[in-house]
Length: 100
Image 1 (tube, rainbow, N blue to C red):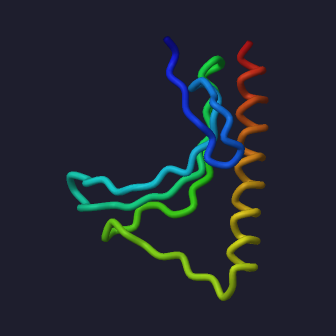
Image 2 (image 1 turned 135 degrees about the horizontal axis):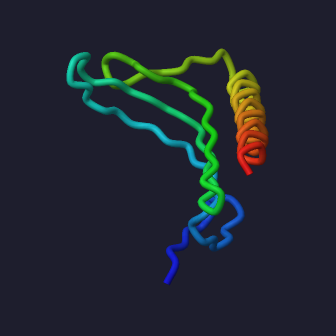
């Protein structure tokens, strides 16, 4: 049986395959200590196509804050990051089609 997940917005039950995720965390680098990251990622299992937009990365203490003067500016920034992810997805599709 194929694994499924439920979208937190539309509540649709979806098979794991093509999805967008907000991924973040920290990892311990052997030489440089703890590093933090936050990305918007898109993945298509069927074509093994992947795109990512980095929101924060390589924070040397493993945690970070992003400051905005208002929720309107936060909203605008997220919209810009999502638009950049769309551009990365389109580029990934173009590259995948070239390889066929």
